[in-house]
Length: 320
Image (cartoon, rainbow, N blue to C red; front, side):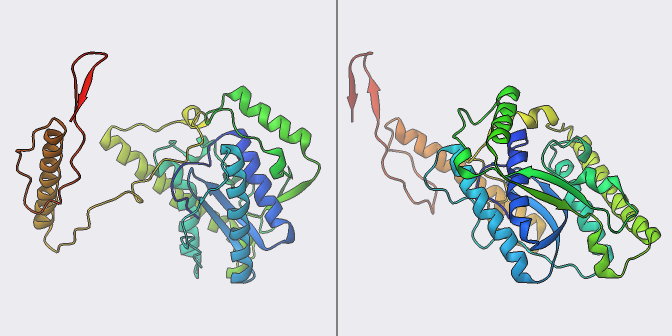
């Protein structure tokens, strides 16, 4: 589930409470068994065991609907199309090795996105600590009673960025107003039943494999940052990030569609396209200054003629 744009799922206490409230509410009729989860700023990774595809669809569909309504209230919007249409990736897994890698990948996301150095430092919602609590019991279960944050309780944020005091104040207000609650149930090792894993030794060995994959992925991300001399954002800055509905990821941004079997030809064509864009930009800047004698590069579609203005004095101006 990925948003069309923006970073609504900030690493604040109020957002964590809201996400847990929504998931617990949706999970109340046992649609799925929730094993692992991690929420990034614009998408979650959720690992579940579902009885059938219908139950799975209902689970993520209700989460999307309730979160859309909640974000609308927080931002004071009447209308909001939050999620990408038909872009939810529901992926079934058929072997233990793949499952182990995907769980490791789930928890390595914050490090791979250069948010924190390791998942232990990530302040957003995740089930990492529940996963580590018992790596050998097949039936380990974590139950958290979550206040039900109803829509009428949610008020528009005074500012997209909240201070720590404001953040905690919202949480206390919701806790005071909540009349009902639901249990958020996490069973990190429940998925292993589907693959015939039964003994404590097998469970422990499987989770150790997950941790080895995870350590490797975080180490790889750390080495990449080192080569680029790049630092992570860090827990403190993540907690202070504003609720943002304008951010657009690189994956969603406009990119050049250029396919070539020859790597050198591909680089050449990209460079020529960039030169073309730079030339068009220079021509348009000259147009804005009133110079219409410039020759546009071949193949360019000329934009509308811009309005030009000459300030003769602070009080007088002529528009041509």
